[in-house]
Length: 385
Figure 1 (tube, rainbow, N blue to C red):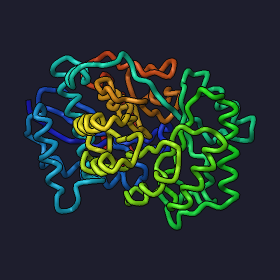
Figure 2 (tube, one colour):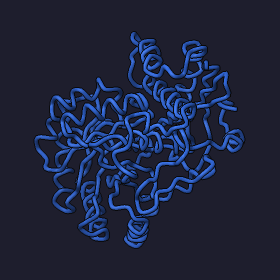
Figure 3 (cartoon, rainbow, N blue to C red):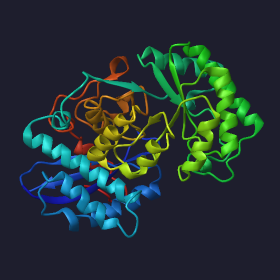
Figure 4 (spheres, one colour):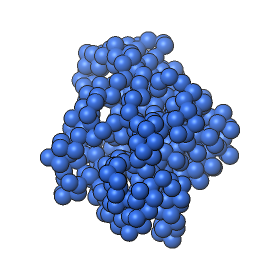
């Protein structure tokens, strides 16, 4: 069997926070097709990565798709001089997931069986309320109660006002400050959600890497005081391990990082310098199924729980879950929503997350089949089809 093409698919869908998902299709000369995902957080990045994927046809077409480890390194080393993290590891991720999907389909086995077999029966989840529905206390209450009624026992949200500028929402770090008023708004919202949720629901706070060191410390301490938070995620921008260490020394809440770290080499300093209580690599960004498994094994040696990040489509969820079926030091898998029906138009069979747990699809490989007809009707900028 030989690889015949790498095809990016940029798809318009309301199931995405950003209105689009970026998938990867890998075709072979024996008719077996594998699927991966990359979906980044901006339209600009999605289009840039799609362009790189097309160039990688020159690297992988004609290769044996069963040689997953060799192909991972073949692609990775192509980017040595321009930087092998970021866009490079995103492309590797999508292709690696698709290679594992092909391997599972050829052997008639789910991916987790090829990674050593399961250590659990299903995958415990944490999820997000829809903060667009936080219109006054009644709106907050309705959304949190609906989330809890769905069976989920942990939720994550970003309580901080975004300074009135939507362009700074997730990645617009400038001075890293937050006003006293903004801090009070965040504390009040977090305290309200704790009252509604009760003491037994885990509350995870996402700071989205927006704050400087003193601001991150102040905000985390305020939330610790009002709501018994269970972690404080990405308190400072990802570029400085020293800044992260300063925050960690001054707060009591557990620290979670990793969605913006690429490959095992980025995580090494986290483990060696004791910088986090949880790590949250994203299978579609950090290097795919192969790399998520390696990072998880590294974390196991430090007794650090792994909790894969997700902010994208169904392949992200399922690929992370396939690995976590085999990982002893697993905490929870993230889903972007507690209601996953938005994915139904993209895949042949709905995902089963009843009771806040994901049941792995029964089929070989990833266990899901993409709805290619829907995808063709919703291709953006001619990327796909």
